[in-house]
Length: 326
Image 1: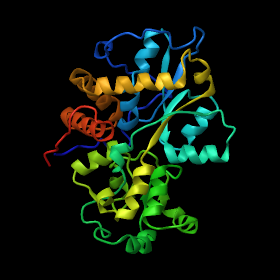
Image 2: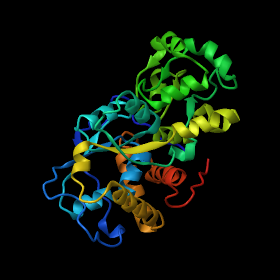
Image 3: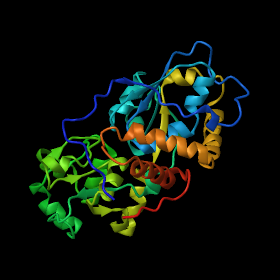
Image 4: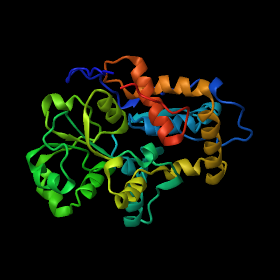
């Protein structure tokens, strides 16, 4: 199965504020019996990194439909995956976001008086099996142990967002400290959401992809230098924990609620369970996310839709398990 990647430099421009993609309301069952938001609520800004794990939750939990029912404008703000998401929620420019649990916990431990609010903890991305380092076929480091790679990594470019959980996971896998991080800093290409076109520029690079690009690269024949299956057992619990996300929100969003936070989360959980069993919803949202999360790819739509379905099932058990024919 081949996924053709568009040429570098041919990316579609993304506006800071993008059109909101709404699942059809027919996919939802029932109406909300009570008013959830106050009458004077301002438009709600929702962070939208182009990641299936994030967008899949936001659509499936029903927040867009709840806002639509109450005639509240939802604005999806394109962001890159990284700690800047926390800052945007803190300063109120983003009202609602999904972001890494460990990063949020660290931020709040350093700033206990923060206005940022945790609504709920989400399932680990890909069931905790989201860690991988991707390389080209035949890469010189394939088959090497982590300690061997640690000694040789200075000779290669490493593409990863420096302020992401992916970079922290890479250092942990290599059993590396902050001094080692400084040593390889000149080798690190700070790119939070890379795709496999980077191999056209740096064929020997080590890439820490998000799940969209990781699965696409694997289907396109690229190899994983390491992944969850290759971790030693005592490392796996850490990587499962590091794969968890929170749903976080701004102080103004909490103030706009006419119901308690726990009641809102209960509604989200009810919607997740209902929509995950609704084949019509899964099909519509898979098609929606295919178009939203893979804008920079030239590919057969069937392949992209299967990638979306795979990520949704492995993370949230939405839909059915996907078997790839590779």
